[in-house]
Structure formats: structure tokens, C-alpha cells
Length: 550
Image (cartoon, rainbow, N blue to C red; front, side):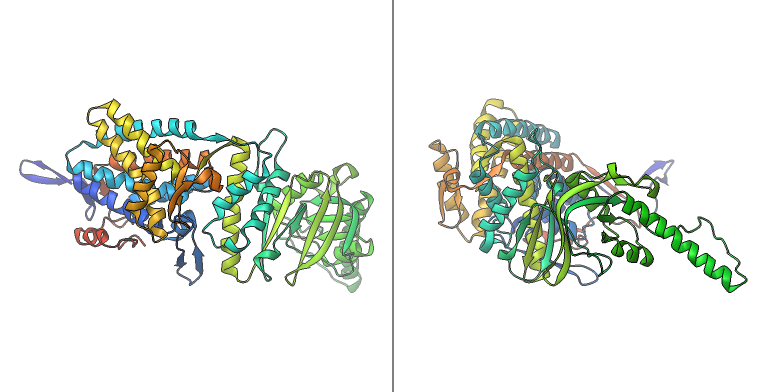
């Protein structure tokens, strides 16, 4: 970038900086975004494939989850990073539909590219896309149907839809029952659901069928001393965020000891200090102590003698959940220990799970904290199962809160596509072209579902459109029987929020990328633009990532 002054060029940008303008800048950004969409597209739907991701130190992740794939990939291109952001937003807001959001975003940009080649101005496309996204939200709300939060059957179907294609098919029914039970237990009286109160503990060993739900908390720790009881009934629980150890001086200090007697006095004094702390715990009436910090060896001995069950180095998040479940207060100072701060639980027990000791806190005062133990044959199976369960928990929670669902299987996208085409003809002008492009882009979802199941996408789309034109609004693609069928009757349903969020996020990212007409990249920074040769290569890569993006 330079300016002329009396024939002398003046450099404005640092040497080595690159600048791409106009159609070239848009082309590069769109190509990068499309490559990200292509990378996750094959994972969509019940017959989607998995990705194996290997990081720099050789750790392997095998997953079907869109957001996990994009987080694990080392993406460098700035426009591609924007596509990753919409997946993260979708995951934070709803917990599912991340692949849908990215694939729709990529297709919107692909359609925009065709319009740019016909000399439609990016601003006109952006305006049309915004109008279409608003209208889409309206139509989605219209075609959604209500559910009652207590209807366990429909909630189970929602959990099943979220988990389909994520490697848990064999035990889907059992896991979905656990998920629905867990959500119903942690739902507050005002109808809100905090899925943080459902703790998912994974253990390698046994099979997926051995997974179970515990009314209460599971702490992945063991008691600090073998002399302590393994089972405590009618537990009075102290939650301590202070070390049961003698206090060390804050600054470096030396203690000068000149005779053996002084050394003995010093050790006796240390022991006395610890005994005083333990006596305070005993005096409070507590028979179970969960400590966030350390417990000294001498303290362990005294606590064991007093028959107190103690656990050390408990995670902060677990301490907070324990406080919620047992009604105990988190005590941050030894001096503040008192009977009023204690919580209660019917039973606390140390049990072996897959060969490892874990602590079960059951029969709690406030049972709005539950735990699910998931088991599987290998680390990879358990990890993927955990991701599937987290998604399903979030999705069921969203439905309990919103009480609105739509049919799955590409049904809402086909309905939106038809309705938006009708709407486009009422808008007129060049914006009509953009709205029609938006309508066409939404068909990528049923098309991808068909492709991933090895079906002919054109035949399936024709069949789906025909069904929707006859006013069958809930007809989607049944990939198992290779035909259009009623998804509502089949029980393939998704929360309304998954769709509204995915479409609005996809439209926002498409508009943002379209409005960029100048890319100025500093020297020595990541995110360098791919060359024309790389761009050409990307066109034929299908699901691959362009060089410089991995």
C-alpha cells in the first residue's frame, strides 16, 4: 500500500505486509469459510461419519461433534476462524446444532458468490440475507409445536435425536432415560434448568449399559486415611476451604534451634496447633469433612481416631455442588467452623467403580444435584459418549425451559425454503435474488443428510418438496427407509432454539464475511492469505482444508 508524492512512492504499510482488495478479498474469505463448512459437513445426521484428530503431541480425538472438531483443528485463516466462532456460540447457547450452523453459513456464502459474479452488490446481498433470516425466525416460531416439560416420552425423543449418530446407538434408550431423569431432578421450581448441576463422571471399564444415575454427588477422590469409616450414615458435613495443617510463615523466616529440647518443643507445638484445629472440627459435630486444600498426616491420624471421614483437595466446582446438595456453607477459615455451617446427607460411602475408589454422597437435603456415571470399553468411546450426553442434557434442558420443539430430519429447512421463496416474490428488486439464494442455501441440510446416508440427494429433495407443497409441514428425510416421512410421528424432534440460533448465527457470519472488501495482513503474523494456486486446489478438495488452515 503506497501513495505517490511528486513521483516518489510513500510506503504506508510495513514492508512484507500484504493487501488483498475487492473481489479477490471476498473470494479468498468465502473459500476459507466454505472449506471449514466442508470439513464438518460429512458428520451431519444419523449416518454422518466421524473425524480422527491428532494433535502435535500425538493425542487422538475421535468425534462426530462439530464444535469439538473445529476447536481441535488448528485453524489459522481469519475468515475460517469466524466460522469456528459461530460453532462455539451455538454450543454455548444451545449445546447442539453446531454442524448445522456452520454448514448453512458455508452454503449462504457459496450462494452469495454466485450473486457476486452476476454483479449483485454485497450490500444488497447482506440486506436480503438479513430480511430472509428475520422472516425465517417468524416462520420457525409458527411451525413449532408446544410440549409439556413433564412429558418424559417427548423429552426422551429429543435426547435420542441429539445423540443419534454419536456412537451411542446400542444403548441409546437407557442413556436417554438417564438424561431425562437427571434433567427432571435438577429443574428448579420456576422451570429453569442449570445443566451444571448434573455431574458426568466417566470411567473406562464395563460397557455403556453399565452407566447409571446417582441421586446426589460423586466425588472422584478417596478418603485420606484407611482408618476412617467407609460408610457414614446421617452425615453432618463440613465444607472447608482452608488447610488442616500448621500455618507456615508468609515470609521466609528462619527458626534458630540450639538444643534437642527446643526441637522437641517446636514439634510438640506444631502437633498442638494441628490438634487444636481437629478439635474445632470435632466440636462442631461434623463427622464428614470435605477439604479444598491439604490435610496434614498428623491431622489425618487425629481425624481417623475421632471416626471422621475426611477428603482432601476436592475441586472448587465439586465443593460448590456439594454446598448446593447438602445445604452446607463453604467455610474459609478454621476459626469460622461452627455447627450452623454444617450440611447433611443421608449416606456418604466410598465405593469401587471400575477398580477405582469414588465417594458417593446420597440422600441429600436438596437433591437438585445428580451425577451420571458413564462407562465404556476405551477412553475414546467414553470421551465421545460424554460429548453426546452433554449435548443431550443441554438440549433437553432447553426444551424444558422453552417448551417449544420443531420436527427434525431437514423438515423445517424444506418448509423454510418453500415459504421464503414465496416471500421473496413479494419483496421484489435485487434483494429478492438474495432471499431466494437464502432459501436455496437452507436445502443444504436435507441434501447433506441424504448424501451422508448414501442416498440420491436430488430424488430425496424432490420427494420432500412435494410433501411440503401438500402442506405436510413435519415431513423430513427418513434416512433409514430412504423416503420422506412424518418426523413428528417418528419422534425425530429438536428444540426450536437449536434452529433459530443456527440460522441467525449462519446469516450473521455470512453477512459479516460478505461485507469485507479489503484484507490487510501484517507481516510476520498468522492468517496469511492462500495463494491463487491454493484457492484452485481448495475447489477440488471436497472435505479437505486448504494449506495454511491446519
